[in-house]
Length: 101
Image (cartoon, rainbow, N blue to C red; front, side, top):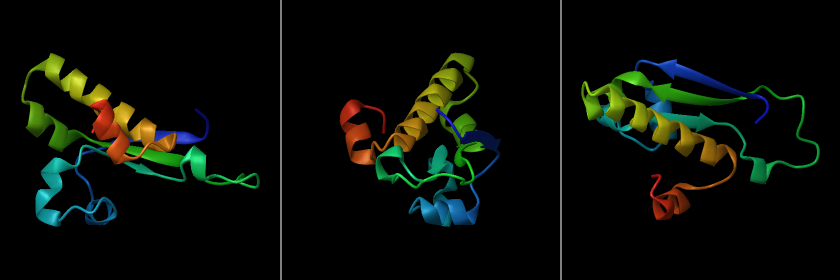
């Protein structure tokens, strides 16, 4: 993967929740978000752009899995893979079919 940045934030912002189609009160349900143009949608002139961004939200993940380090690692792994899949153009419907939604 090239030109992609991964960051960790405590919580999703109201703008991120809106982008994901999630109401502000449900901020506990968003574990990660991909911001960018999927590889499958880029044309031949796609260059000179800012990096795509994958944001992982720490607090919602911690709240969902509890204090177990093994469960925490697994959820982080699944979340990162889910967002990377969006970078490659795989949508939520297909991720659900694959068990990664």
